[in-house]
Amino acid sequence: MSDWRLTTQNTALVVIDLQEKLMAAMPRRAEVVTAADRLIRAARILELPTLVTVQYVKGLGPVCAELAEATAGLTPVEKMAFSCCGAAAFARALKDSGRKRILLCGVEAHVCVQQTALDLLAGDHTVYLVADAICSRRATDCAAATERLRDDGAVLTTAEAAVYELLREAGTPQFKQVLPLFK
Image (cartoon, rainbow, N blue to C red; front, side, top):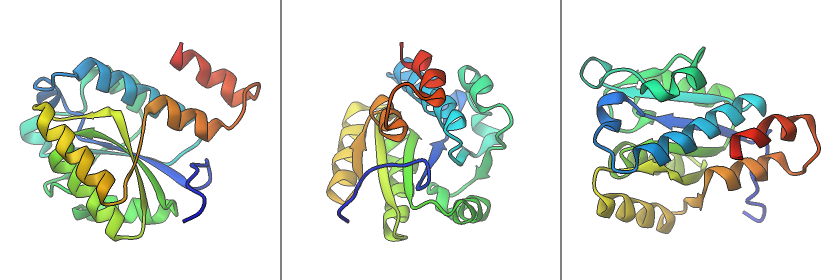
């Protein structure tokens, strides 16, 4: 691929399992939640399709409280498979979005994020792994997953870098709405 840029026409956001019981065990909870919140809010402004998943909601609970406002109106896809692609509702919604570039954030990096990314890569999607918006309980697991996914073709980015790439320029109405998220 010669053009790796994210655009508002080719990109969707996938938010994986940012649930209370999982996030309670994350050493970088505040950083990950802040980055995810910025991504979700910016995605709304930029009108990106946004898919939110929850793993075994009965045991792990709903999306964490800090993201309740940002995710209001988005119906999380419940799943049991570690890969989001293993949930028929997710696969259908992603296909219906028509987007081939996928911004991924969530937990755990070495389980659900990694398996989802590998399935998306195998399915001819380009995966953008948002480094400040993913986490595992152990830093070594997160680092290993990030390195493996980069080696397998995922593109590493950050929440701010991705959003500004999508914006393209300052001074637009969307830029003015997004700017407060990153101040």
